[in-house]
Amino acid sequence: MDLTRRRLLSTAGAGAATLGLYAAGFSSGTAWAAPRFAADPFSLGVASGDPLPDGVVLWTRLAPDPLAVDGLGGMPQQSVTVEWEIARDEAFSDVVQRGETSAVPELAHSVHVEVSGLEPRHDYFYRFRAGSDISPVGRTRTAPDPQEADAAAGLSFAFASCQCWYEGFYTAYRHMAAEDLDFVVHLGDYLYEYGVGPTGGVRGISLDASFQRETYTLSEYRNRHALTRMDTDLQAAHLAFPWVLTWDDHEVENNWAGDIAQLDSDGFPDSDVDEFRARKAAAFQAYYEHLPLRLPQKPEGAEVAMYRRLRFGRLMELHVLDTRMYRDDQACGGGTESGCDAERSDPSRTILGDTQERWLLDGAAATDASWNVLANQTLIAQVDQDPDPDVVLSGLDMWDGYTAARDRLLTGLYESGANNPVVLTGDIHRSVVADLKLDFADESSPVVATEFAGTSISSGGDGAAMDDKGYDWMAAGVNPHLKWHNSQRGYTVVRLTHEELRADYRVVPYVTSTGAGVQTAAGGSNRARSAVSSGSSSRARRTRA
Image: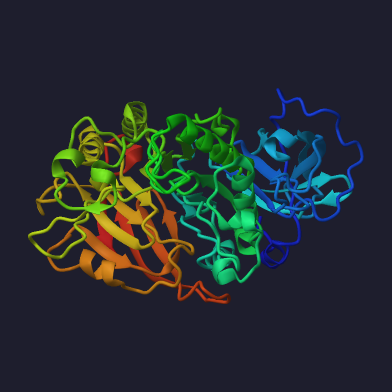
């Protein structure tokens, strides 16, 4: 069943709806019996996420005044009943489920409804109602049945990351919304915590002074999310597909690692763990309140289990990683450094944490899906960022700062015979295709996986096909395992069957003004080494398109 794209795009900013299932345990006083809102309560849109074969989670947040300084979105300290329904058709003539839930002030009047009992690999339409206000209609799609082995039934999705609101427009999302996709994967930096200039950067929008400083409190994180979610192009992409999300650093603070902050409020290294955990708790709560996440991803203070696994028929096992919560601090003070080999190669250092690392390797080895796809935040491939043959310049916030952990990952995938590993990566504001090898210094070393790193949606402003850093990375003989590079903005579309996984890089020529078109800069593919349905093990063999 096809969604009417014209209607979907035209309603992206017209209003939206939210719902919530998990208000239990909150005491928010009396309910608002007959709510009447001063403005559209669905100003932040609607969304769905984490598709399963029999269901999805549906999201919205009531916010008639989304940028209210107190972070409450113009809502009172009362709970509000939100009705929801999900149907097989956009006109809602065939409703399959409906219900109601409470939007409570303790969760910024956000709602997360986990719908089950749906059919696998099927399109559904959903909407919400609060008082007399009705949201626009979103479309979602359930995952294939876990045992579906239909060789003709492929899978299509896009992945994206890094959407700095004040550095560029989200034009790429408008183009993404017009694609034919099953879902979207977001790899982190959904927002940026830095202060926004008084005119909103390239947006040219006047903002309250509270936006001009870095975010620290719950109300500030809520309003930064709300500012991000008000973008109609982003709303269009959420309306069109279910999303699978994980975070990187800027959802809290640049380059945070576990309970270690990069900077405190005075701009100096922060040694107060309790203070940073309070900041993390605020950031985590606001993140949950504004995105279509399931109950296991609801934080408890500064603790949350963000990593998880989603199955898409027998085609793909999607391992959603968290490379922030459990990592050791960056080596040598972080940044890009040379002469740091002893510390960054320390075998005790971890980027995933022992539990997540074991969970990943065990799950990848055990699955019978054709492809193991890792939704990863920072670049795994080794990158010497200096073309001088006598200098090795490493980015220590990436896996280059955790080389023993990288060795354990790639060796574990290789020795277990994990089916066709592929890595999707964000963070670096550029597109890179890389062979992930057991030994990057040995050109004859086996290739374990292909890494498709995607560029930013807007972070970094207007890009170019190749920038100075790209020339350094791709200089002859410096990083021979890097196969392709581009520094424009955009997103990546992945299409896969049991035999092949293909990534096509969509780019826009500019983001500092609106109206950019989209083109495909390049594409690359993997072909499965052997048919998984035969029961034999498989490792990826990469081919170039």
